[in-house]
Length: 376
Ligand code: SAH
Image (spheres, rainbow, N blue to C red):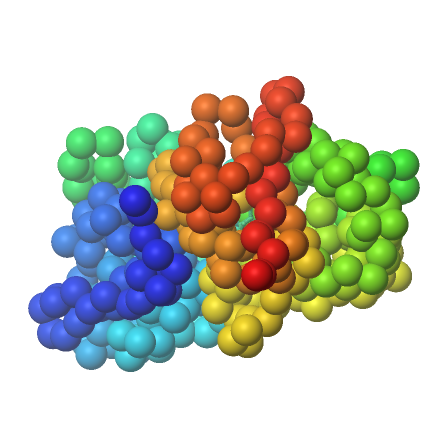
């Protein structure tokens, strides 16, 4: 059933006109109709293009070799694919694009990352363009395309829809006026977790912006109920998919030696700031599942509130890879704590990988616990 961890991490070359494009599970922009349609429509314009949401690189691929194409990507999984494909890419969020520098922007709307992230990306794209420059804007009408197209027109000027396929649209716009300044990017909120108060800062696009997810709160409660606070002090703990640190911070505060793995750069930047602001320490690695860990690195406790959406589509490949990684990275006798929507069926996989599991708690979410067998 499902993918093994080795299969999950494997890059697959797809033949494309003019070369190959590497893809992998968990990387955006593969088998995505928005990127597919974008790729059918884009043609070169001027000398320099920007792709601020490339995923595996399909959308701007037709420009390759015909003009300079710069890509900004935040996902470690997508970055690995782009680099393997030999496509030029910089690890950076869209709002770090050079200003007044491009003739063309190719943008698949990052609709799955929330309105704040899309709006910041649109303003960044407008600022990156030279006057008279153009934008290909692609999206799905069931994921806000019409609204974002209107916002892009308000920022740039004239635009029209070039192509429609099912719910997918590609529009072309031209920059006719000066772009506004970037919106404020950092937001801040306070939260009390296990009786302790924390201040969280985050950039747009992170999971559970403005408020800690209820599922994360339940995971912490179930974990402390199972091992106690003294069962956390001094333990090596792995937080898989750490986000801005809703689990990492309280665990570090209780004396856990936490390693936090996170695929998204924007979340990594938020988490690093949160550790500093709350005077805590943890090792934060920008990592597609466990690829940033060294071989044989193992933990006493592994926690996760796994993702089940990538770019708006329900996909369980990543969540499944998290379970595989937990089974591989636990010390004998170590415990794995996973919180999920009750309708998601992790139980058979836990049974298969760990031999047994327990349900610690069921409310709006369920917390599942599995232990790695002791040797001998
Ligand atoms: N632990 C945090 C975030 C949970 S959401 C909290 O409780 O609030 C799941 C997180 O997994 C998101 O931050 C998402 O960016 C991250 N993620 C998604 N795919 C990933 C991958 N392939 N490798 C590592 N992290 C990933």
